[in-house]
Image (tube, rainbow, N blue to C red; front, top):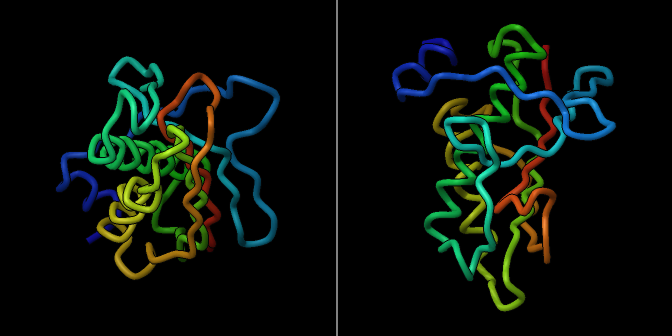
Amino acid sequence: MSIEDKLKELGIELQTPPSPVANYIPVQQTGNLIYLSGQGPRDEEGNFITGKVGADISAEQAYDLSRNTAVNLISAMKSYLGSLERVVKIVKVFGMVNATSDFTDHPKVINGCSDFFVEVFEDKGRHARSAVGMGSLPNNMAVEIEIIVEVS
């Protein structure tokens, strides 16, 4: 089954990624690696889902927002690559959680992204990862995730 068929089976419809909000490009390629700029969770209208994990957002809700962000990252990959079949493997995930100073479940939050990548890409979705807490994130996003992907 193709990656796009798997996404359809999961009820996921990829959206056109929004334009960058600052002076950067969404994807940078060098050799067979693509580096995707940080993405955050968005609602159906394309607005950032905001809040601080540990205060307004629970770890469970943030897990879902991390999964939402994974979908946005896949949309950016598709937009750049044309076909998700070009993905050889997800190499690295760097997840940032907009969290209170006493929140410690950052890995649980970023598992939303990691679990989704493995669900969609199977073994090609297994990756190295960092999950860290931040005092704030741009636009008050609840999470921001950037990734490195090997492509053919």
